[in-house]
Image 1 (cartoon, rainbow, N blue to C red):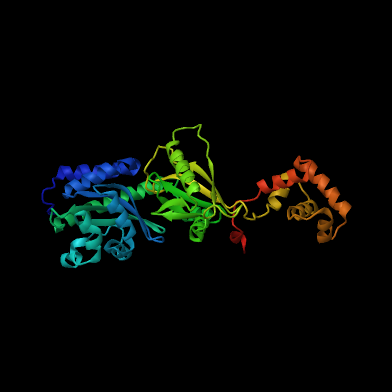
Image 2: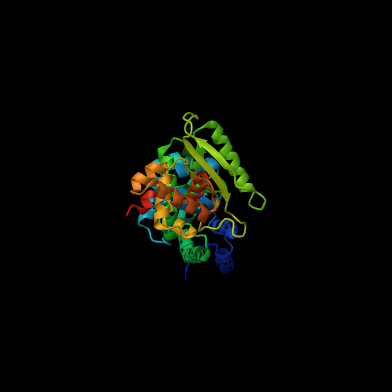
Amino acid sequence: MIDLEGVTARQLSDVIGAIYDCALAPERWPATCRMVADLCASTGGGICVHDLQQVQNDQLFVFGYSPEFLEKLGSQYAESPMAAADVVSNVGDVNSLSREPRQLIESRFYREVLQPFDLADMVWFPALRTGRRMASLHASRSRERPFYQQHDLQLFRLLSPHVCRALAISDALDIRALHSEMLEKTLDGLSAGVFLTARDGHVVYMNAAAEGQVRAGRSIRLDHQRLSAVNPTARAALAQAMDAAMRSVADPSWKSPSVAIPDGAGVGVGCGYVATLLPIENGERSGILAPFAASVAIFMQDPVQVPLMPGEAFARLHGLTGGELRVLLALSQGLGGMESAAMLGISEPTVRTHLQRIFSKTGTTRQSDLLSLLHRSTPPVRVAAHAN
């Protein structure tokens, strides 16, 4: 018989039932995490998500910690014993910091992260691993209580498979699973940077273009995992727009704003990005784990980036012939009628004839309107996505 020391069968049954309730109602996780912590006399706990590629740690449903501790843990997560243990652990494997108490107390992690915030021990297990992200459930004790004992670890081992199943069910049911490989590949093909931020402003996802924009560091950067503009005026405007987007979830009349993000201190006319914000949380499944609490999408576009020409799709949409499309694409490169004729090996009157037919088919009357229509039809994908 399993000895859980002080935990009744009724208490265990209630907690397991609450865990499965979270599968369909993830907003119940905070209360359920508290139930788990109470069973093992813990002062804090919750669920956190680790980005294994960016090596960062985002706390979703946590309690009992100061913001300063969470920031400290996030900044040193890559060097923590948890990160090291999770590399070799399977989903559901229970670990604790105090397996080697003396080694823990002598460690830099204990001195710099746990001790300043009066924490002594943590117990956890990886509960869901999808692609490059992993979620884990944990609990912690202050220095007023002893380290976790075998009966505490046994309790976590009993609860572990139920938590893993509940998170797997929730993950499978969520149609907004932003970590899916197919969707990530699609987002990585976009020319615009895509940032997804949580309700507290933390960036929880970046596509490839967004990562490149942050690495460049000329206009935007990550400040404690929050998106920030380098230019002070743009920084204030972006923060205000993000706050408005988060508060507008229930307001159908709210319109997505655009914010100018110039380079550096604002010098260099025409350099920088245009950010467009869109709230993506509908309130029905707020706090859901699969998209990692994404609340606002920010699209960061370089307005001077040369887009791909739409080509065949534009021609099919407007019924253009091959000759007409070639003339249009030549004109779109800034060539005049004579230069287009020379490049295409046709006469200038033929160029004018093609242009008049294009006007008729596209419903335009001026070359500037035609080129504007073509530009609005360009796909928002990176050139590298079609290099092959």
